[in-house]
Amino acid sequence: MKKQNFKSLTLAMAIMGTLGVANAQAPVAANPVPAVPQAQASAPTTPAQVAAPKSEVSETAKNEKTLDRIRRTNKIVIGNRSSSIPFSYYGENKKPIGYAIDICLNIAETIKKQYNLPTAKIEFVEVRGDTRIPFVEDGKVDLECGSTTNNADRRKRVDFSIPYYVAGVKILARKSEGIESITDIKGKKVAVGKGTSTIKIVERLNKERLLNLSTIEEKDFPSAMQAVVEKRADIFILDDILLYGERSKVAEPDKYIVTNDFLSVEPLAVMMKKGDVEINKVVNKKIVEMINNGEINKLYAKWFQSPIYPTNKSLNIAPDALLTEVFRMPTHIVGN
Image (cartoon, rainbow, N blue to C red):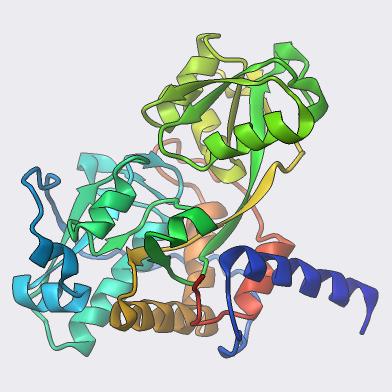
């Protein structure tokens, strides 16, 4: 085996280890991700937007299987984020849009067809970092389609699909601070999103590297970005692609730098109810199909390599080696 191929395989295996994947046996994608076409995915019909349920959730609702609930209510509820560009955020008229949203709309249409539910409605419920897991657990959301990392702690409470993106956590800072790598952040104040995995990354950095970092916990990503803009925080730690998205929205994006250092690797995936085998199989089978038929390539081109709302500018991000290898070896089996 050539050295370069061995390195790529090692990277893919590292991701699989992060996911807790066993016995990867799914089909290999016919067309690897780097050959991304510039075609636009067809626009889905506009689903209904609903407020999150506020009433107490019964034990029956918590224990009900997802597909049973979908059949009973004749609706599929997707959990969306408000500002996770380009994965899950609001477009014009507060319509949920994004890469993860398009993937979940494809899954929803498959559910309608496979289970003979042609009149089933697709509804959205907004989730935050601190509500997304409880909403899935309680049955308020059938599929959480935001920018959620599959990690061991979360797998104790929910299940995840095959990854649809692999991000690297990086550092955003004001250029005037002179921060270029992890060695420059000792003693800094870090903005983090409430309920995100970056809080534990900061804890790990303090323990392993003695960086003496303090944190400001903000309600969402735009608020964390604003903390850096207003100098209430020195740096913002988050998935690199989300940092680029938040930086693109500020008045003077060129005043901020995203460093090259990776603090961790973050596989992003659809979140589902724990132990619900039937919905897990449906979701993963559809994602594998989208990988193999090239549909996921089209969605990648649409959201990462073409102009997007609201700036009408492209993020210009090519698929990296980690994502390419994960897509080359997708697996239905994602577990502990």
